[in-house]
Length: 63
Image (cartoon, rainbow, N blue to C red; front, side, top):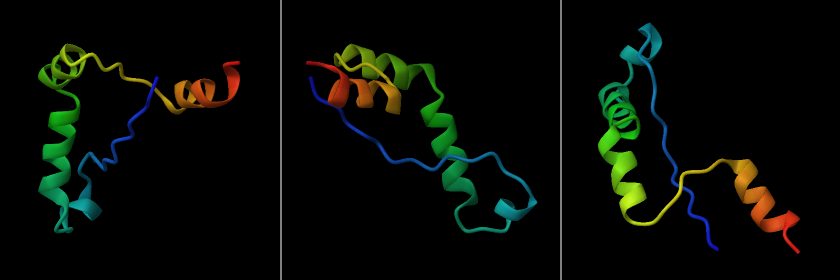
């Protein structure tokens, strides 16, 4: 079994972030990461979403 980590930095927009050049890319990323179509595409390819706990168990708790 393998794992893949995807780095992302979505954000809800507040006044501080609104002034940043990264404002709209973060909004787009949030929309994509929370979409049903991404969840479907991940499952369709045989991947399973997990957490850091899943990675820890995979690496250190299986004998």
